[in-house]
Amino acid sequence: MNLVKHIPNMVTLGNLACGTLAIINIFNDEPKTAVYLVLLAAVLDFFDGFLARLLKVSGEFGKQLDSMADLVTFGVAPACLLYSLSYNIDGVYRYSFVLLAAFSAFRLAKYNLDTRQTSTSFIGVPTPVTGITVMSLAMVDGGFLYDLIFDNGYGFLVFSAAISFLLISEIKVPSNKIKKGPVSNYYQHIFLLATVVISIIFFQWLSVLIFYAFYVLSSIIFNFAAKKSS
Image (tube, rainbow, N blue to C red):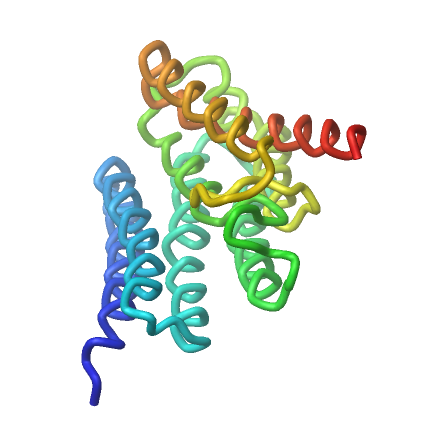
C-alpha cells in the first residue's frame, strides 16, 4: 500500500473530523468553537488539493472524498448553526435551515459532473465560501442585520433560501487559485482582497458577510462587463 498517495486523503479526513466536531460543539452550545473548527477545516480543504497536485496523486477517489467532507463541514454544520441561532423563530420558517444542507449536497454532486468548472473559476458560489459565511454569524453580536435574519421568520427564510440558491446558480465566480487567465480575473482578486482587508479593519466578523456580498456582486458585474466587451 502506497501511503504517500493517501496523504491528501488523510488531510481531507481531517476536514471531515473538524466538521463533525463543529456539529457536536454547536449542539453543546459552543458555537464559537465550532466556527474555529470550520475555519481550520477550510485550511485543510485548501491543502488537500494542493498536496494532491504536489504529489501528483489527484484522482476520482480523492475528489469524491473531498465532496463528502465538504458536505458535512460546509453544508451540514452551518445548517445546524442556523437552526441553533434561530430559537426566536416559530413555526415552519425555522426549518428553512434544511435548504442549506440540501442545496450543498446538490451543488457538490453537480460540481463533480460539471465540465465548465475550472481551476480559476466556478459556476455557482463554492460550498466552503457559503459555509464560512454562515458560520461567521455566530461571532456577530447582534445588530440590525443579525436581528433581521434571526428574529424574523420571513428574514430567516429569505436568507436561507438566497444563500442556498446561490450555491447552484449560474453565476461565474473566481476560485481562490490565482493562475494565468483573463486580466479581469486578476482585477477581481485584487478587488476582493482589498474588500476583505478594509472590512476586517472596520467591521471585524461582519466583514465575512460583507466579503460574501462583494464576492457575489462583483462576479455579476465582471461577468456582465466581460459579455459586453466580447
